[in-house]
Length: 338
Ligand SMILES: NC(=O)c1ccc[n+]([C@@H]2O[C@H](COP(=O)([O-])OP(=O)(O)OC[C@H]3O[C@@H](n4cnc5c(N)ncnc54)[C@H](OP(=O)(O)O)[C@@H]3O)[C@@H](O)[C@H]2O)c1
Image (cartoon, rainbow, N blue to C red; front, side, top):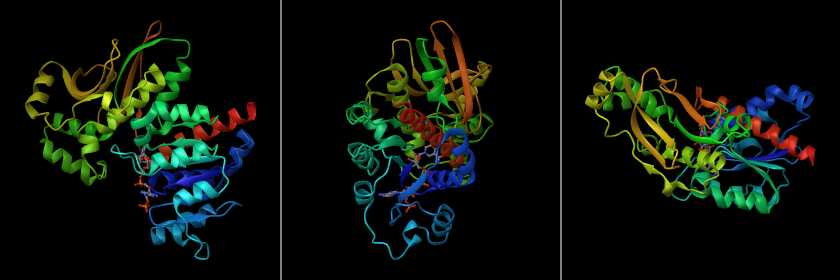
């Protein structure tokens, strides 16, 4: 399977390491022989239709900060040219999420699908802004669009709701989908001010370069869009979500919640009327959803099987890379079925 990687940051490098370490069992268990034939970051590209040497690629990126230095003799072309001119089966989109115009990820995904490539995206931006139309484009071009890593990192939240609960009618769900705000609120519950808790989260590398994505609920809202479309069959995008972040949560709000045996959490919710909101909400301390630190959790309530909660790490390079691998295995299975 020939793969083009868009972006070569934390997640893509973890994915490349994962492929390297799993070469033999991926082939023996799943018949999967992945070959990365093209990769680009913000400064340049590397390509080789016979497959790039992943060890060398990772080393070069670490040493020089760009994949451009992989082979100085190759002609440098743009990411768009790589997608348009190199033959591949799957495009993996890992550039930064942005919720203004979703670029450059949006153009990568659209160009790849038009070239009949299957797409795996961990970039939430294009899905948050255009989930319904991207799905239509995938159907029109008869390709698969997968995005397991966008919600819950390595925790298989989308897969659980879609496949393990198949045949059930999910009536509502609510989740803690952003680990950074959960970490800040957990520290505030232990007595820190908002500013100190934010500073601490930044020092640990938990906060996005644009802190508004975490603090104003944009990241959680993007994940809610993906869940609402994929699980509930709604055709919604980011503007349809009512969102309020955590900037206005005060130490008093947290103390009042504690008096009621509750904690304040940033909850992304799809209620029984299918209203979609992201907002700080008091939830009982003994509710399984009430996880602390950077953990994510989501509770699905179904018609017959009641409420079930999944808890896990919602981010991390290797965790998210494992979600990409799951998608790749699924794509391989689907292709070999037909
Ligand atoms: N990290 C996680 O735990 C996690 C979990 C779930 C989902 N995600 C999502 O996965 C994506 C990747 O995350 P990450 O942590 O790997 O981010 P990252 O380390 O910042 O990597 C982003 C990559 O995109 C490249 N890039 C940026 N602008 C570009 C452009 N215009 N053209 C080509 N390449 C460009 C960067 O190039 P340079 O290397 O040259 O800067 C970098 O290689 C994001 O959308 C993120 O929201 C991340």
